[in-house]
Length: 365
Ligand SMILES: [Cu+2]
Image (cartoon, rainbow, N blue to C red; front, side, top):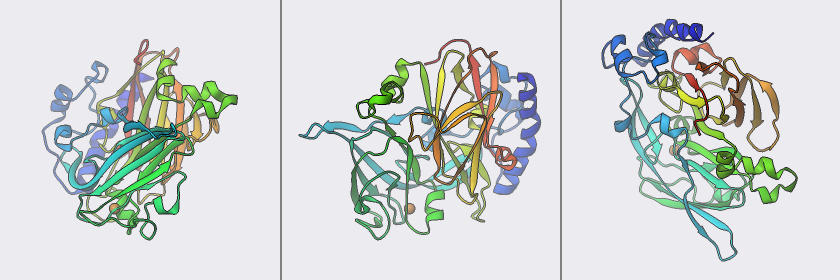
């Protein structure tokens, strides 16, 4: 099973790469498939198979690495109001920035804090969230948070501060409700363009166990500390796409921005870990994206707003634009090896949305 999976990737990708390059209309940098085998493979298990794109994205130049984005929660600057309520403060700066979304494929992105996706904001239900937004870009932008808040704080063009002009700033402030796996994004028109340029990020609200006495244990396990204590490995993936030639279609698809990143750099998980994957779809131009987990099934919490699953024992889930949810699964009793996950739209897979878990014995948390 494992060998055939790896072989399938090997067979798939050279053609995929050709299409990627042809559609993006650019040259792929950095040499031959041999160079990939020598430089790129993180797992010995992948040696001998051509996998992913040829060459490697310059993560240092990009200023972010999808392997780090899996877990780099941003809890903000914590303080307390006199009432005792926690306040989490953030500074988010919009800036224009060229990023490399596949080796040699560059995209003129608009970013929050220089990265795509933007910082993964993580707070607790009921926290006061205060976000200072500075527009350092060349176009007007906003931040629209999914969540409960007043119209003034909605980050849309004609409410509150409205569009924030280049060089201007504003503060968005609200109390974090409801708990779940949410997102934020620019809401300036044309929305399609502003969103797909890269102005989006994850916004996780952990449940406060005190507010859910009937399901307090489940709520606790949904918190950062509670998850760690329970051996739950938490991961964050934003499914996105890039229209690199501005024809209104995506030429590149990815999990966390870089095509084939987790095929080239499999995500290590242990047979004794439990896995919780926060999944967000911000893909523009295609009405749906999806995730299919190979050789396994998961429970799903739509929008993450419930403590009990909304779907049980499924291996594929689709999300419309801005839909998101939480997947929970594990590899207990599994033979170690490389286990795929990817969109179940073949075109997306061929153009970059292909990933791997490297299952190893024991715990990795
Ligand atoms: Cu914008």
